[in-house]
Image 1: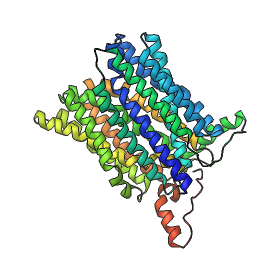
Image 2: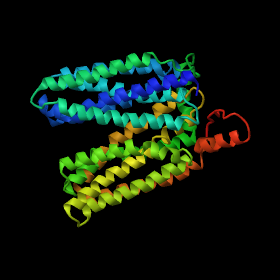
Image 3: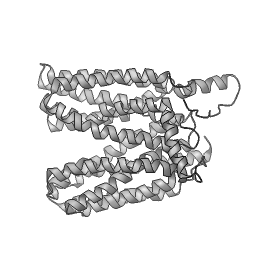
Image 4: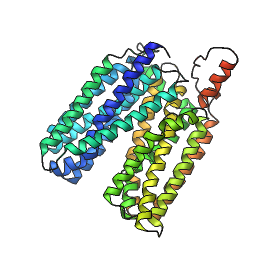
Length: 428
């Protein structure tokens, strides 16, 4: 990696940490703020989360084309300003209409940040350094969310609207500060399709859908996010409370265990993960999550003590965190390596769209099941986890050696006395 790329990457990582810190300030308290502090009721509070998802689904296809045509930095700056306006609007909103409008702006801005930042990481890394770069991104995101949530929890007071207004103002300030930091980034030039006509943009979607490996990875990604991330704060938490009798404080401990596992394990597993075939790493994550669902089943369906049930439930979240630490340096770099030259923004946006769909469907399906259909809930998501392993191994047959195991290819080149050049990602 050149000195310029290294300097740009450091600023990108600082930006990731700042955005996660700002989100951690407000996300855990959105429901309480809208439903109770503003007195707008549970229906409006639930609609806020739905608006987040809908806004993301609307803007991501457009964001992908914009990143390809204009580059990730201008798109990111526009997203940050939009998110800042939305955050400040939420802090000042007193009516349902104002809350939902501000939520749409915040949700759209947040959604576009993900593929824009991911594309900047791709532009500032090589195939060999990409896994470590995305692992660092995931580490800083979780660290920022945890610290932001911890500080935010000490600032809010459910009896004072002004404390929440301060929280959203700080979040808006973080987005604007991030915009200032990112404006100084000099992203190395990458192929752009700035002069391409509209037909070329539509053709890029046809090309993406014609890439069998990318389509299979998208299906796998949907199952990953549906069966894990889509259950954290919906089905799994409802199951823990209703079936296992977990207290709200124990649920908070479980979420903290998940974050702690990611922070502790991220770089411990990185050296192992980046030397393995990516398809096999994802398959191993499916098996780890299958064990997590078995442990969750013991917590809610077993006949042990309440202490054992709580310990098992906390362990479930920790096991999910271990799987997440293995996925962060695996899936995102693979999306980038599947993208033809100049199309990383389109592919990152398409994968982010799949993620948003899974996060929208996951709670809708898992929430009611986790609350009332305890045994079917565990069995269903145990099967989904095993399905992850099956889909990952099937995906491996569609990948080239460079795409599935770039570390091994690099070392073969070096052993033969040649430079460790970055191979061009080819369509599978």
